[in-house]
Amino acid sequence: MNALSELPVTLHDVEAAAELLVGITAVTPIESSRALGAICGGEVFFKCENLQRAGSFKVRGAYVRMAKLTAEERARGVVAASAGNHAQGVAVAAKSLGIKARIYMPLGVALPKLAATRSHGAEVVLHGHNVDESLAEAQRFADESGAVFVHPFDNVDVVAGQGTVGLEILDQIPNVDTVLMGVGGGGLLAGVAVAIKTRAKELGREIRIIGVQAENAAAYPPSLAADALVPLKKVSTMADGIAVGRPGQLPFSIIRELVDDVVTVSEDALARALVFMLERAKLVVEPAGAVGVAALMEGKIENPGTTAVILSGGNIDPMLMLKVIQRGLAAAGRFMTVRMMLDDRPGSLATISRIIAENDANVTGVDHTRVGGSISMGDVSITVNLETKGHEHCELVLTALRAEGFQPIVVH
Image 1 (cartoon, one colour):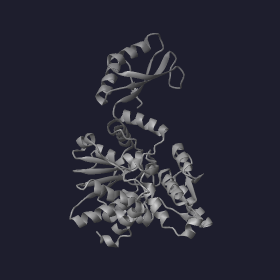
Image 2: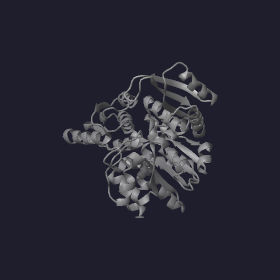
Image 3: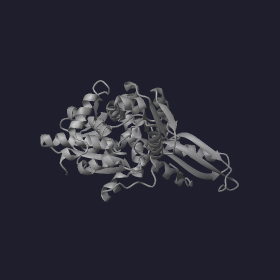
Image 4: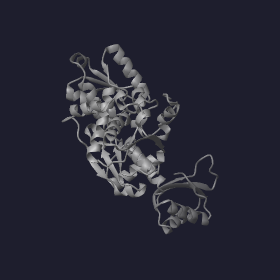
């Protein structure tokens, strides 16, 4: 490991950022989770950045970056690009500092994030199909107009601002052994690593810092293996807050030196984690904010000890939440959709209903069709949505249907 003082962001930078943020951002609460602790075999705490101003940690870095602008730079205004959280963070910071903000967001961005960004007074321009395309357009506008480009993660002041989350964790959980958080471009992970690793060294302690990525948007594992930035050809995940196809150069230079590991989780694991947070923690968290929870639930972290999971944001589109909850329930065996063919005669549907009822499953929806390329004359296709009680119960229902001569195909 290089000397900590030689890194592009130091503990002094993070401490200075913390002073700038006094009275601007909240010291977000810590919540314990006995339920998650029982799953992973350690004491687990949530650092609730989902309850931060604008709904995520992003306002920290955005404010620190913009508070250091000169009067002349402030007069030129700022420009940024984001799928939502950085956009809101920049908008809130700009309003607090009296700076005009123009923010590029991808086409198809979640409506609540779009509306929230505009409500904070920023001008929003929809451009591109992903964050990388929006970033390129924002940079082009900055070059042409002279507006100051506020990068979401590749900037020393932004990284220092995000690192203040780490200082708060050390104050709130002095005995912490492991700190988990999602990573997209890497600003949060890099900043927290600087703060916690430096303080731990001063105390003569070891504290593990682990990043978590969605497996379909995981640019850090191959980049760390190659010791160079490796862009992804495709990014596809419900966790839009960390859907970044290329690590930031500045965060990467810190993460490769300080971070202990970067692990990945599946989309199903993410969905299960979100359902868990709603049911057991009573907290609304967006997918990017739940990746650390997913990693613990999936057993991706060995010997976690006393663990802090940074819930990085809570800005989730209700429509996405609806889909995620259904996917999470299906992944846990608590929701199942089956399709089967049956004779088009009176009583066939009643027989299916009886079998399902006798096996204590609940029908929530039925689709009945006689028309389709694979449907023969005299047959009908039935799709049934069921509430179930776990994977064993799902198999019990399927076995009972097969015993009566049906051939159910599981759709979800």
